Structure formats: structure tokens, C-alpha cells
Length: 300
Image (cartoon, rainbow, N blue to C red; front, side):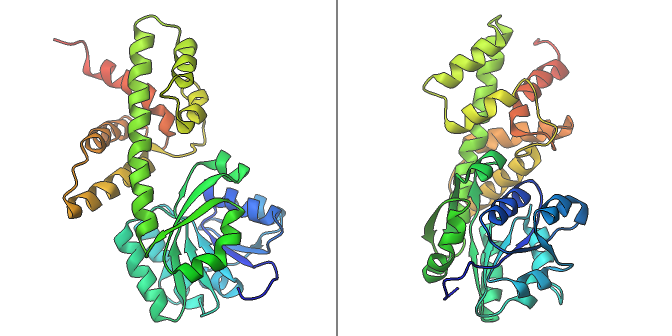
């Protein structure tokens, strides 16, 4: 990215978040090459101008900047490795920016492999959901080489507000720190709301007053409309939330940092998944708590 032309983007992982980000970059005028495990998920983007490729290597070879948005360590490793993987398609002029939330350890290992091949990888997890993608207001935390960050910063600004955090993996560390609070806030809000509604307070009134009070963070205000009418397509699933909480727990154990509220929400998320809520949005915690009490029966 040393000239003034519009950078060509490669995008691997076109799910809810990745697809929304690719759509925004297309709308901004970037040529976008992309692929997903299933092409059906990308048909709408292809209609908008996305140039489909059949393998991650082909996407990387076509792009100035390669973006990935994938659910976990194992999936990213699969997409990165092998003769058809991203690493096989990178060259020294290409920067790989991983937007996934994975473990800092796995990300640092991939960054080292990219450096060994003469290319550069940045970790750039995002805070926000599909509405923030569409509005271009994601918070993006970037770890890795600062010069590489400065080169791709204009692309990231199409999606939100990027900040260079530090070395490889540090963007992910901060993202996990944020997601602890995300999960705990939602659980605490669900607890208070259930207490109010079970006491006879009108549920809409309780929700609206609570989100208008001092506890009404931007996240809670955005999710409040979903609580009593859960979307079929989750912005951020309880299963993925638990994955992030557990990644934070793994990191905390290596640093001897106690995470008492994260441990509590992890147990509730385990219960939620046992009740079949793993694929539902984080806002489902209110419904989960109501069911947990019903499943447990009356207090002794």
C-alpha cells in the first residue's frame, strides 16, 4: 500500500459480521475479493460486486489488504494453513488484518509465521455488532507492527475507529477485557429486569427506565429492544460470548488475575447452552434467567 489508488481488499469469512463489513467496503468503492465456507452466504455480496474466489490463497493473492473474520482459533488456523491457505497467498506487499476474536497466543503464532514468509499480520478485533458495522462506528483494537497499522488505517476507518494498542496480540487482549464487561453488564441487567418484572413492574417501563438511568451503557441501550423480541439472526451469540469469556479466563490464569464476575457469567452461559440458547443473541440472558428459575423449581 505505497500508492494512492484505492486498496484492493480480500475478505475471508462472510458471516453476519464479515459480510456486513465486506458490504460496507464495497459501498466505499473498494474492489473486494472474497470467499466463505458456503457460497450461498455470499450471493448477496456477489450481487453487490464482490469477486468470488474459491480458496483463501486466491483471495490473499488478489489483494493489497486481506481481512479475516472467523469464529475461533481452529477455523482461522484451517483457513491460514496448507497449500490453499492465506499464508500461501501472501507476499511482502500484502498486509493480513485479522478481525476475529481468538486467543492472543494463537494470533501471535500466526503473526510469526507471516513474518517468516516475508509478510505482515495484524490482530484487529472489533467491538460492536452488525448495526455498528453498518454505521461505521466499530471500535477496532490493533496489535502488531505500527508502520503496517498506519498503512491499513484508512481501510479500517471505513469500518470504525481504529487504535494501535501495541505488539501482536495486544489488540486481542484488550478485546477480551472489553468482552468480560459486555457479558457481565448484560447478565446484571437481565437480573435486575427480571427482579422488577417478577415484582409486578411493567416490563417495558422497567426496561426503558433502567436503560435511561446511570446504568444505561451504549451496549445495553442497543440491545434493550431485543430482550422481549429476540431476533432470529443473533448479533452476537451466547456461544461466541462464552468462547470469549473462556479465552479471557485462560489468559487470566497465566497472569494470576482473578476474574470473579467472568467466572459467574461463564457458569450462566453454560446453563444457557444446556437449555438450547447457544445460538441466540446475548439479549437472551433475560429469558435464560427466567427459565433457569423455572427449571430449578421453587426455593426450599
